[in-house]
Image (cartoon, rainbow, N blue to C red; front, side, top):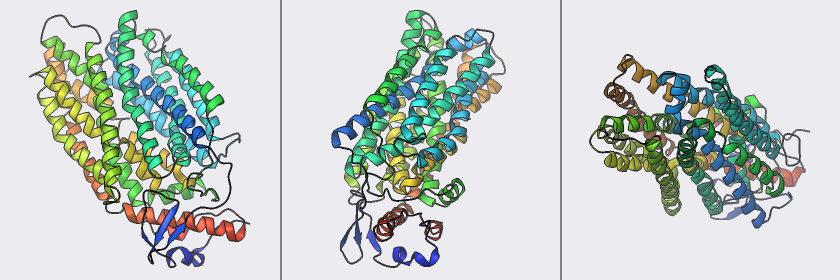
Length: 511
């Protein structure tokens, strides 16, 4: 018998014991309008000890670090790849676009599987991650052997790497939510998302330095595959997979159909606005990470004097790494400290960061010809502001979706943000710079063209900030509705002994 509840059965959720406010420090407890506290827990799942949870999050962090390190190694040696395959900027931009397209298109599939797999099953989230890490490591290694006259084949390998990474990233963030709750979850998400800038920066630094030492960009692509094998062993031997909703003790909930999941998420205002804001982040970050090293390299050539190969990639990589770590930590800490006074602070911090990043990025681009050091300082400030939201975007997604829809929510976030964000921004900026340069061989013309093409990112950043601020207006109401669903699921299980399916009528009220 299905535990699906029709509209007539939802009164106990929406009318009785109305939630007066959301306790964002501990989702396992809810404060009602009369001031009483309700324990939002039930049932029994095999418990995961604190030490097991810490080891598991450490393994996830290692893989997340490797994920972004692998992704940005190509950007670090892009100038070498362009010379080797004799391609222009627009074709070089396709390398990132092809990766992102496959990455985003396959994300919903792995999100669907991740919400339905249970620990120990064939399609468990652990199995999906193992397969993904093995796939992207093998293809990255294979891509380093593609001949100079086979650029199309090299492009295909970047597509396949995207498939492997999609299988990991869609299930890893929901797993973090299922291992921790309250402040512990916030800290776990901070540490997990710190690997994004750290891995990106290491991709630039390690990729550039290995390529320089070996005098070959192909050697740079052979670093991460070996580390991928180590990560697979860690998953097999040390990782303990939690059940969906285990940290919140909301494990007695049926997954709904793929169609219902998508339909309900598209009607969730906070989720959609959060995704729109992050799309702007992806657009700007995609263009900056792909083209900034080349722009700095062209600027150094214009200044005359000896220019060391990969010097720009090294400097930008260090700035990206430090600014990203500082941004993720600062944004999350601001939100954590103010959350008890301003429960909707998460989207506000995100919005403020993007609104400020726009003018800082404009100043960065404008002043590149003035001073390399000033450019790096301004780029540091820009990237710090862009990275304030990395952990908070995931926190918002997790809080406004029920446990059995979190992997799907993550995958839709990935699909939308990359489809409209960094899937196209490297190619669009590269294409615009080629159109402006008009096939000129002049370094000065190439630099000016790329500089002008990147100004569009300033406007996209401001638009994203507006989306996050709009999200702050609906965020608390959507958090409350999720708590009601989790509470009713536990009540239903205690009364009927069966798992509960989130009601369509309550989900529809998100609109």
